[in-house]
Image 1 (cartoon, chains in turn green, brown):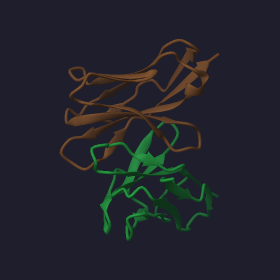
Image 2 (cartoon, each protein chain N blue to C red; image 1 turned 45 degrees about the vertical axis):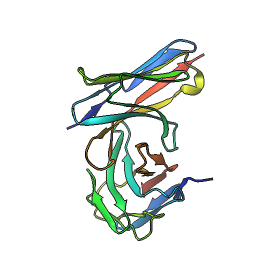
Image 3 (cartoon, each protein chain N blue to C red; image 1 turned 90 degrees about the vertical axis):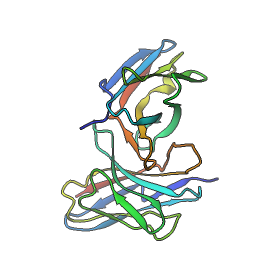
Image 4 (cartoon, rainbow over the protein chains, first blue to last red; image 1 turned 180 degrees about the vertical axis):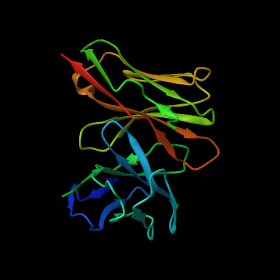
Length: 113
Length: 113
């Protein structure tokens, strides 16, 4: 079955550490996205990528970095520069066939300890 | 500046009754609107969408209405069922650019037996 997989589901990070969240899709979608969800704030866009080897900052990119070396993969690194990293992170992908909807992964909950 | 607003953070409805979730937007360049449903600790799933050239789209128990002059859309669920209890996100896409969705903050729907 085609889908989008995020791992790990739960992640604990010590202050000052970088961590990388994995996102893989086998939907053959060109575009991929990272969102962050905080209580009462909905989904905020961190980074997005329309095509391999290209990506753009979203609304809250500070303290995060991404790469898009393969069509299927769009990992997100939460760096030590991100001051409030504890949140629920969602990865999504979309096609360009007129259906503008996103397919979301099941999310990664990151907690700083 | 929130371009997509869901002003009701929560809604409680009795089973069998109608649920009406509302969404307002400010950007007149939005040409496509979507509703997503999200359970705790899971990724959002696509529910229903509407193009700006239409004013209504129906799919089973779910109907979305779009009032372009008022920059308002609503999701009607009839009849409501306990399994509909979730957070509902409204999303909008601007025409002419990347397939980037802007999400509202979400409305938590509770359907009581």
